Image (tube, rainbow, N blue to C red; front, side):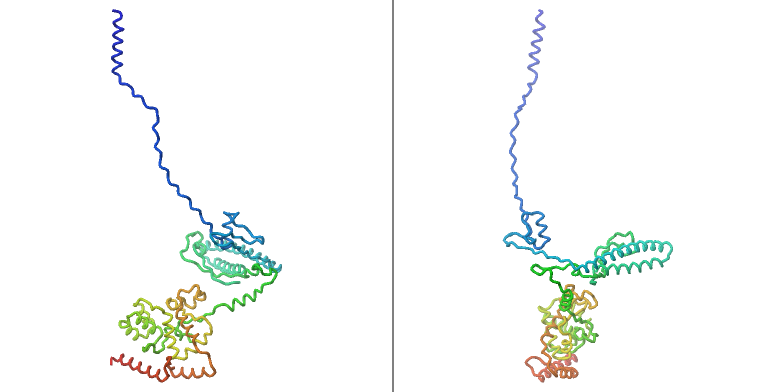
Length: 436
């Protein structure tokens, strides 16, 4: 009986052990990793080395590729063969010092400039204090005095810097750089400011540039160069105002009666606008309005309502002007008086036929600054180039014809035939005007 409890315990252990769930054995073997798809690597495109064209681009390329860009035995820049272009050499200019006297003059000028700059800064500080006093007390005498002194010093400083006069354009200046009383305004001005610049000595007086192959000791005639530049400088004859006693007759607004294409006109601009709308197929609608007007302003206003331009405006102007001078020989003398100067139609409101600038505008003297093609000026020059040479006694005959109103001579017609044609045109014109 003593063994019964132990047997019972064994039976219970067996029973309970069979009832427990068996633990799942984890598989410690790692699952195979799926191979990832390899990304397609694009080859890097090599940057092309720019082919040097001057010394600046050569040294930029040499900074990155020192072995590729070298120097020649005489110190010039050696550019290798690149992308099918043959090797080349960029010649560097040689410089020669000026004589001792010029060098001493430059040192003296520099010392003067340093003293003027120092005086300018001191006067500017005094002006600021005077402006503060003016705001507080209303006393303006000191402020005005320092302003005048500052203007004098600024002109002297500019004169020492350079004798070449030119206009310099300053962009994005702050308010305090322009307005003296606005010391703390750093906001940028939205428009450019123009100032007169002076240069006391040209650069050629301090360093002489010698081209390769030239004698480095040979002196350069600076005065001769200046004279050559003056001779090559282009000269202009401006015309626009009909009231100009010298060249006002060349203006398209000048009242002058002539016949072109069997139509009588009272000005060049009237002739051009009528012929333009005729070629555009609008003559029936607008020609009567244009022919009735004797005001250049009104003719322009009516003409602006018809958009479009002829295929060759310059050629149309040449045809009109050729007929004009044939009927009014006085224009021949006016054109001959202009010599070989460039004829420029300087009307700031007219950019189609002129330059879009007035003759008082400094930019009118610079061809690159013109805002129009100057077609009318070009046409006058073409007509001038076709004038016959002056013969002895010809001037007196032309003067007599001009006093009698001129003659209408067309190619292939006698003077009598031309007069008869003109009379018939005038008859037709007056008949249309009277409604006959």
